[in-house]
Length: 365
Image 1: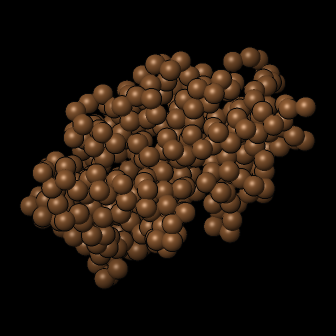
Image 2: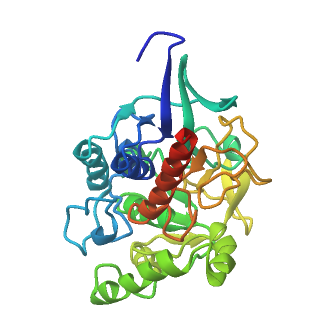
């Protein structure tokens, strides 16, 4: 990077070098538009590498490819998180995408007809900005967590890697969605484990079975073509799925029971240093893993584009109130599959087309 106070000018700045940012970059490159991708991690794919060791994707490899390159694994297999990370890194190299790693954008504003993205003392000026960093980077941890005894090890799911991190004794996993269920199975091999939270339901079939191969194409078609903001059923379903946890996919209730994992009610507070449940029970554990999700974190964007709950107001990623500003990679941005590796490509292409058309119109006589 240049010295303090340095400034660079681009037609388009893409903030975030994950699957969404790379997909937008691919489509802009195909249209010969100049751009740069800014990624806060030191390597492309690190957002996947930093997750727990046993994590595997919940979608088959045939649905894990970005535009222009299928995922290099057997079509019906479920890649590991490290395979996904390496795929993203190689993808950027394969298409020679201009990515700068280790650049954490801490501010975005607008001055006149240009956007200003800042990273420490460096400035990136742009006609267009694509926010592809995701909205859920800040862990959501209950406000009562500081009241737990200091002898209890607390980790958010973003910090958990493997059971050897934990202290001897019991583990309370708070949050019974897919992350919580999978982490509970992981730690139950070496620790007494309890899973706290409401039932989210589960798929009526197991992954990697004949039924899985038969039904997944149908589900993918529905999720990418029918459950969209353009269809009546999609518009009806969208508000519900935005605030309801997804059903368990790989770790099913029978697996949790077979592993000896205790199912307990929601964790709602602390008493005498111990986590307490909705039924009043105090849990005597040495570890708590918060699988309680994330909260939107757009505080670094100084632009009036957000609704009352903190989400950007947009039309399929295009922000009408701020021409040249775009969002991509968010859950159900356009379709149910919009935030998935194999589903983000369509939204990315839509945004790249919009940027290209706007740029050509601005230069026409």
